[in-house]
Image (cartoon, rainbow, N blue to C red; front, side):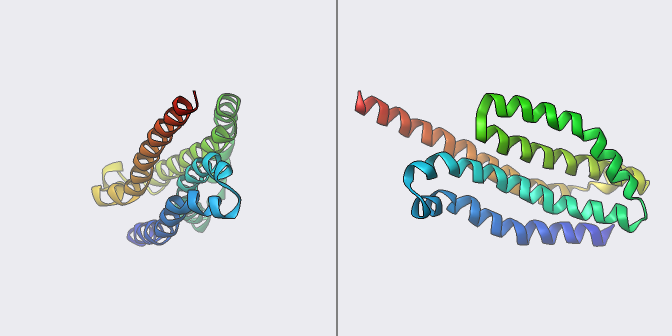
Length: 171
């Protein structure tokens, strides 16, 4: 268990640094690569995907623990359980928010998968949740998504204020 959490910390740190760079540079890189309009509409999609990639990277460790303990059936059962929820969330978000909703639904599905796998890992290893999810681990795993979500919310309000200013100046 100690080894598992040390790898979670390592992945959060290593992958997190790379993803934080991608998150912060999404708009300028897309602006240079294609154009400003594309970057304005696509950067939020990239930023949402970044959160899902982190959850997916950590989730791979959970899957490895199940398979290493000769229990690949747990991941299969959890996938069957998640499937209807993921479809409903995807349908709702895509129909209401388009491509942004598609990115958000994928990210939500990755975070949901990670959450379920962590819960079932604690159950499978017969550990109390307090022992399994100690404060240090929760802070390590949750800090990166919280930082990115906060930045995303601030970025969205900033972009909305720019759009309102641009629209009012055109009128």
